[in-house]
Length: 331
Image (tube, rainbow, N blue to C red; front, side, top):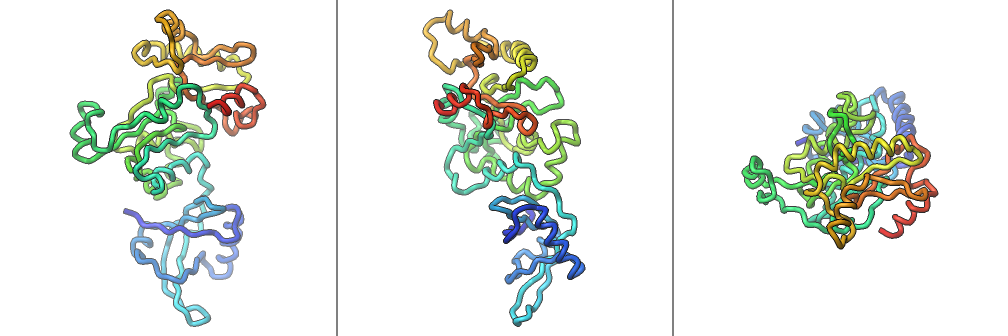
């Protein structure tokens, strides 16, 4: 297990400012050093594989490799130690990767945890997903036959993810990482694994052609997890783009090819239906219909993921569309 240090970058508001300060230190001392009063207990381990994680404005934004740790005597005669750091300060960790920190927050102990991205909106019926209990860690009764023994022997847990049915590229991840449900502890290693090599993970999947630059947290979660992934029923999460009829048509076409074949077995209406005719009609509706400038989604859908974060000016948290505001206030 790797050991690391966390330090608050006092008076620093951006990575650029941290780079400027460290450049000045390097010019003065010929190297980048950070002085601290106490010698770390895991000195040798830190020198071998450890890093300094800098906290800037309450967030861990950057990792810097530790090169050496030596004892020193300060001008006032007090003992201290100097931590020498790598001069190559990496770029800021993309925002979407911070959700991995929630997997190891002890405040959530003994709880079912759900992580949802800010670019998602719940529809009716979301409570069924929120309050549905997940199997306990080590419970093999919900695992595939070939995994039952491993789950019970190694006390493995469960992770629930939505299926990215709109992704037709076989090289892309089949899951959408913006919704993650788990019992606390089942996914706790995520944080340490990512924090040990953040630059590696934030570049790995893009370099493999599996995602856009800086993205890939869904690939990380599905690849690193040692347990059972429980997919939400296909179609429970949907994708939406503003003012793009061609993309809407493509989503409807993909829904017909990817989702409808799973019905009626996986169809669970988010609203009660009184008759089999209503059930059949609702099940076979398109993914989304635009009626009076307002999208009407298939009753299978519980969560809408808004596409285009960072590139589309009409993001759901900026749009003036009344139906978006109404959904937020209602659900």
